[in-house]
Length: 120
Image (tube, rainbow, N blue to C red):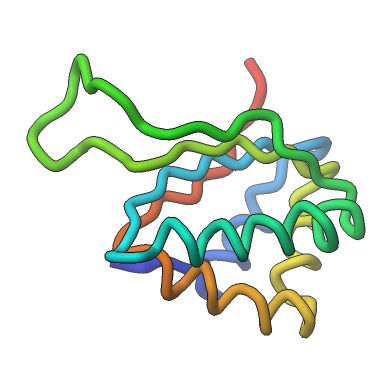
């Protein structure tokens, strides 16, 4: 299971850009000890990279009771992060400083969903 976006995924993400802001859905499943590593990543994200690229966390919370899900489909955490554009998100993940910090996220997770959303 991929944890981080790959080059081909980012290329398709940019090609399918409808324009305007994007809200990224993050579904996270932590590795053993991963919650603490992810907290370090989240601190760097919110203090450095989101301000640098115009992003903001709209919601961050722990997973709770699953009402409709098969066994194993529940998530440890959910985040919604808004970026001013898909290009801003892409520029952030390409930032060499971000690349140094993202290894914390990679080590923190065993599984993730990172999905762009569009407003209705």
